[in-house]
Image (cartoon, rainbow, N blue to C red; front, side):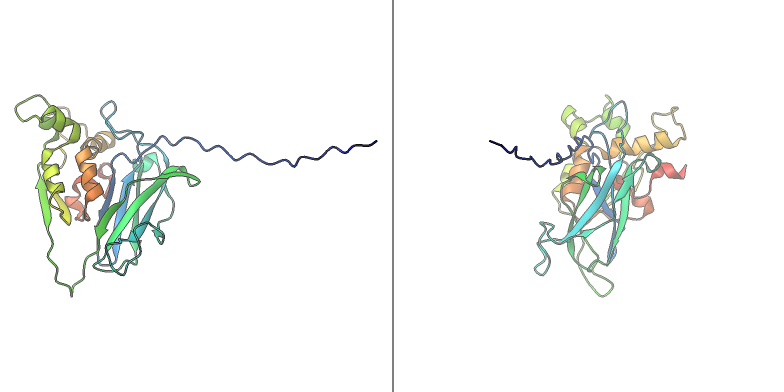
Length: 254
């Protein structure tokens, strides 16, 4: 008696994706907002904290996903079912691992939500927290706007041990004034100058790209700064008023 051996069809195993260990440790920024456009920016990092005096960046890819906020009666839901997407952006050492794009074709006077999708490759990503901003109403619109102007963010005395030092809790979270700003539901955060001090500590100033970038990294990684970005309306400002958002890489201007 003959028997037949059934043939087993082979199937390829699903590829195992690498564990994503990077993060967007300095939050996101929506700046240079107009009636119909916005510049979105983030930076890919190994962790959301200072390691050996800096916040290390990491190579990867990212894209921004944008949708009309569900708070707009005629807009799409902020579940991102209908989104505008930026191209995939490369986070490279030459750009300090910053990813930045300009989104155009937006509606005026409209609340938008956005988020960063990032990872080591386009087929292996995670999604960051949802942020928000509003486009300007235009020259024919009249709208009240609440905003805050900040200057003199004195990082070194705050994190030192002298009379102007923050409490242990505040040194972990960042400047307490940022907590007050969070509660005001403001539209703009404008940093007018003295945001970082390249010559502090005095006598240790090195006019190098690495040092100048490090000064911004340690400032913008404060959890209260990131929380401002998480709950923010938009943060829009000119080049001198970049503050927490460094829409232009300061180190690139050395």
